[in-house]
Image (cartoon, rainbow, N blue to C red; front, side, top):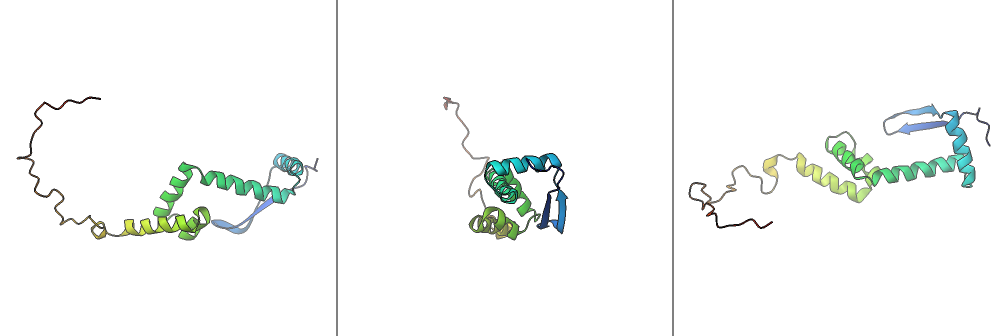
Length: 138
């Protein structure tokens, strides 16, 4: 087992954190990390990298997480570059294209002209009314 008095720190940079910000892991977590990494035949550093990558990938497979990412992107809370990191180039490009369409004025979207008569010749006063012969067989 490892010496639980030693400190392990996670250093973050970029993507919303202060450059070089450090956070010490709790001693119990450090000890568990050491034991599990050794059991997998990996260094603690490699095990943490692998575990984080797998956890992030699992989260990105969640429909609720993807909806939140989509909502945050459309609300301009995350950048296109961050979207590419999370979802990949092709999917991010599709979201960007849709966002550009949604950001346009509604009148600029195909089929959304306010001048367009969507009802055609329909007149509710002369429309046929149900005769009562129709039955709902459900």
